[in-house]
Image (cartoon, rainbow, N blue to C red; front, side, top):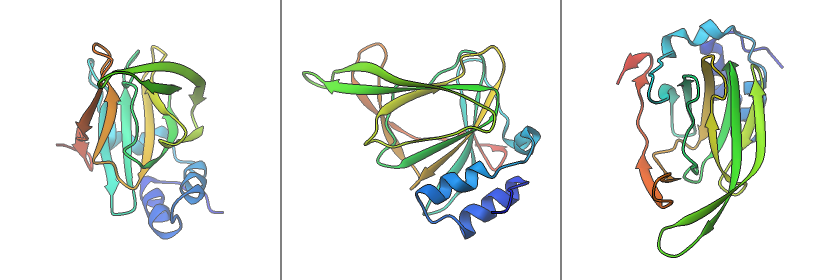
Length: 180
């Protein structure tokens, strides 16, 4: 298959070639562009990771997530969507969790699979496999591409303080390189 040498080529390949499932992952594995190909989506904040929308259609959404040192997502699901992560720059840590619901909306989490991914690695998750966290375990910046199919409008997460499941409407820090 053809290498994906630019962000435009990636978007085109996702629309033209990928019709779900393993085809999305296969396209993401063919990326050969340098990390500066995502420069217009590189937005770092010291207190939270940023979600930067690159492309969204009925079938999928593609985002660049930017993580400063030590930032990590809460334990969360994907609202029924399949999720693919491609590391563009840095080191990414993903931890899967078994979630056992208790009384009320409380949840006990048990960590399971732990994956350390580096530039070029691709991973997959969906709600049937596990809930997870994603984060930057290093002191260097982390940039990851996330492809969700279908797009995620909201997800559930576990509030770290209360241990309760909560719902979050998904937002973007930027859209097509412009701060939202």
